[in-house]
Amino acid sequence: METTMGKNTGDAASSNVIGKTADSAHEAVDKLARAAAPVIDRLAASAHQAVDRIASSGTPAAEWIEGNVRRVKESPERIFGDAKQRIMDNPMIALGAAILAGILISELTRHRDR
Image 1 (tube, helix red, strand yellow):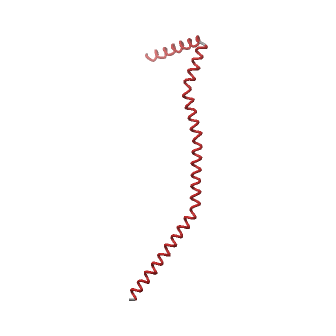
Image 2: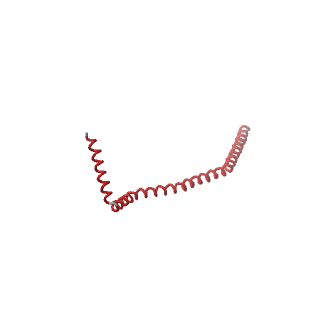
Image 3: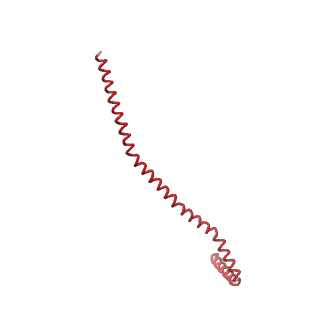
């Protein structure tokens, strides 16, 4: 019977040691979690700030690109409008420039054929 009682006593002692070890491990994990929480909070705040900076710096770039695209789209209208006004203001000069451009293109293409 002693062996049975000794075995039970040993099981209870080892169970007690395992319980104390588990409690110690839980306490250590809780202590680490409490210590890590401020660091994690600071990292999260830094990440949020970085994202906010990137988002706010992207807005002016997008506006700049949008403005340039608008100017490029408006350029042909402005250029043709300016050219039309110059032709109307100086029709003889425009006619002379057109004749010279025709002669130049004719000479360039004729020499290419040879």
